[in-house]
Length: 337
Image (cartoon, rainbow, N blue to C red):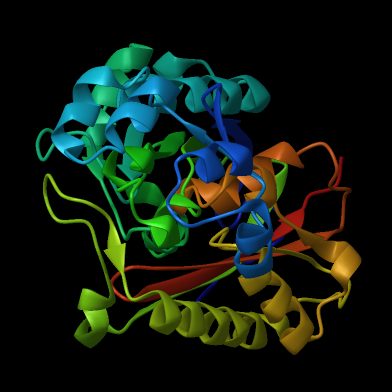
């Protein structure tokens, strides 16, 4: 566990954050019409998701069910670089930092478009950024892993401004004949501009990152294949580990009325965590009901969508879980205006 000082210029500062979701909507009626044994009532009872976004044409899903995920690469309406760049531009604008000031680009997520090069390179090229680039991916836990990694480095080894981008166009890997996974996933991207020395709107407080590699087979996306998971086992893992993250980091917060943002796996999982952890329901923020599980982009996109909501002095606890199996969490404090 890492602990930063939340005063002055010490610690890692979050200067701006952005998000992007593609236009195509996969609602529950669309999934009903695929005739795969699902319905709006079945979906709402099990996962609480009404709609999702996808980079795939709806006719392609309807006609092929994405039986061959390799074909999805050719028909997708957005590349990962294009999606990531859209989220990054929002983050850069909010941070008031020009692209040419970025000294490092880090990307991650569940479903990079290429095995090589690093997706960070393709996103940087899309933005016209010439800086070191690399991927630091831990599936749905990537955002916490990236911040934990940066917070643990010596500030003098880092550039003034760092761009973090997590792109999740994971519907390209979904088998739309499988109702158990088709109802979950949506596409989205999130980006953040952070700095080890320039003050920003948020200050990173504490971060943690843990893994259980012996259970890596519970969630996988084989190269060129479909997303696959042991649903009941992963659901239980997500609830337990998110609760542990809340328990571990709660004591580091000065306020009990903190904002909580969890991994956007499904709404019922999040509601279970909130109830078990005794989190004030009105302080729980989510978007999974409208955008589906957007993997590593889910939790930071919630942070982005509520960017203007947070007030000076408020604290945020963000906890995420993912394949690996890996889980992590970070806390933020909103700086004085």
